[in-house]
Image (cartoon, rainbow, N blue to C red; front, side):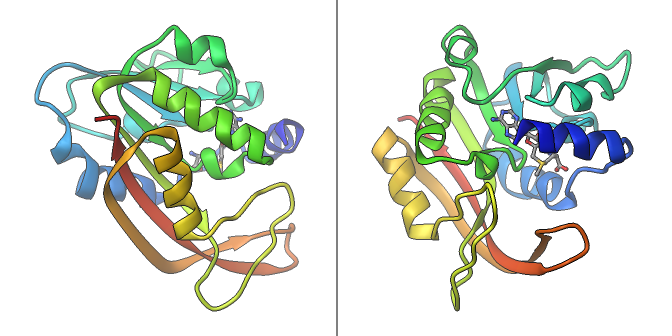
Length: 202
Ligand SMILES: C[S@@+](CC[C@H](N)C(=O)[O-])C[C@H]1O[C@@H](n2cnc3c(N)ncnc32)[C@H](O)[C@@H]1O
């Protein structure tokens, strides 16, 4: 999977992040955050974190991605701390505490049940006691089952159970069915639904 993303960023150095991510942050997440200086982690930032474009947020932002090609393309002189780290890196998540972990379409890229469980445990462990986890992720559409290579696409109910099993309390849960993902270069286009979730540890 990492090789695929490295290859993707070599071919697409000017890739833009998905607009739905920043819309979700501004419309649903930002108002829930405490009005003090906070620590934010952006997961799967690619070569440009959405937090480059977020205004009125008093925060130290760390943005991670496992693709060194993407990280090498991130803006120079940014105040965001970009690092090549995987969501499955236990040491990083044990040694850092965040008030917000924001998933920029990284979690749904994990390719096995074990990786998903480890990724969620890492997120949970790195959150402050009153911290928030916010994610937008691909889920199965309501009217059919889709299969995307190298990805596990769950139903909304399965994702809900996955988060509850780790210990999260879900504050916000919204499904939209207006997004489309290209699965194979140029070939088939598959439609999946998107789930927006905000969860806490308490
Ligand atoms: C679908 S892309 C989204 C990129 C960007 N946030 C955007 O909106 O265009 C998923 C990103 O997650 C990264 N990624 C996938 N699995 C990862 C993992 N296990 N740890 C860290 N980053 C990962 C990929 O390299 C890629 O940049």
